[in-house]
Amino acid sequence: MKALSRSHSVENSSMPFDDFQETEKNFSAIFDRLFPLLRSITGPGTLESYRILQEFMPLNISRVDTGTKVFDWTVPQEWRCEEAYLLGPDGEIVVDMKDSNLHILNYSAPIDAKMSLQELDPHLFTIPQKPDAIPYTSSYYKKRWGFCLSDRQKQTLKDGEYHAVIKSEFVDGGVDIAQTKLEGRSQREIILSSYMCHPSLANNELSGPLTLLGLYHRLNKWPKRNHTFRFTIQPETIGTLCMLHQHLDEIKTNAVGGLIVNMTGGERDRLTYKQSVFKDGIIDKSIHFAQANGVVLDTLDFDPNSGADERHYATPGVRIPVCNVTRDFYHLGFVGYHNSLDTKEYMRIEQIINAVDDLERMLMIADNCVVYENRELVGEPQLGPRGLYPSLNFVAKTPDEAEKEAHAELCRIKWLLTLADGRHDLIDIAERTGYALHDLAQTAEKLKDNGLLTLKA
Image 1: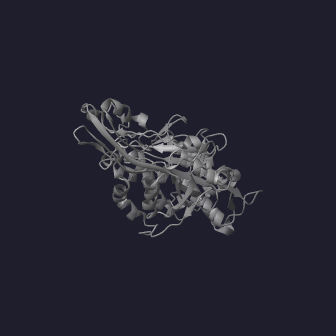
Image 2: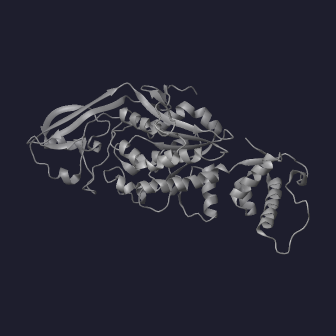
Image 3: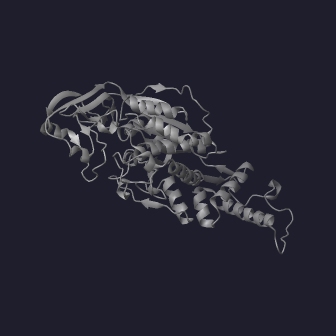
């Protein structure tokens, strides 16, 4: 499928892309640069956010232009907002976007008008159940104007004339998408995705891209990757649809699974995985394997009514098994969901590092979920000439650790040569034999290097 996009190359990187330890040390400073930007599904704030991340990972930024038909959607005009404030009856500033960009209804139409409190009221948005929180509210596809404020503040507003000023505009632009790949030994692709479209929200907006940034540098340090990893950041819903519009044929051909990464900060001590629609992807299998081997994690069934962009991958014309991972789904008690209580202090940078640690381990399992084929289809190959079988048939009564490991490896070799039939992956073999996946992977590499196994594409 031909992409309707413009591409932008990486420029002026301020640090080596392989220095992941330095990147993680700078997570707090990167967050502080990203947090104040006015982001939306389009516009300069989102593009500037990509530019900041582009300093730390080699992102390619592309655009799908306003008016482009993307499946059943049409890319909207780009929204820009220079200034927004509300003055009270005595000329006092009631709310000002300079104080928090949550104060402006995201995608608000422009206005410069005076009106009574009664006329103003339908354009004020609050959360009565959380009286001190400023809500994040948007109106992407229907033009309206408005301000967001705490319910406690709204209750103090007195009668009189108010002056509403919103200096916004809608221009032809497009939806911007940021991507990079870490190539593996095969084109089998694992998608790692997050979104960038909310204004000043910490956990709900910035934890996902920061986690992807950490994972990029961790995976870039691996000595080998069996799979290719696609890192993609875009606005929620319309951005993911635009990304699929650009790359659908490639993704349907190569993708074996993926993860939507969002809300990885917060108070809970472990991550929650939402399974893909048919529970049949490489991440699903890795989750089940990890649980069976004592890793404590929570899982949820697929539900298109909760979560994020995994539902777009689940639709009939795509059917890529993409899971979701989070620490703080809103229905699990996330008090800051879409409001100003979602702060850096609540998110906690150390929880992002913990998520990077946990997800790297999960992705190691997924990356070892590969299929080998025995090149000697009939009979067991002769191992001795290849240095894979002891030349002396002797076992001590009390074998030392080296002898024990040599015997264990010989057992792994025989199981691998038996089950490496082009159908069983290493997780299947680990579950059948009880051997550690990591040990099987190392032994399979040794057999591959000796010409006995081949890695199935």
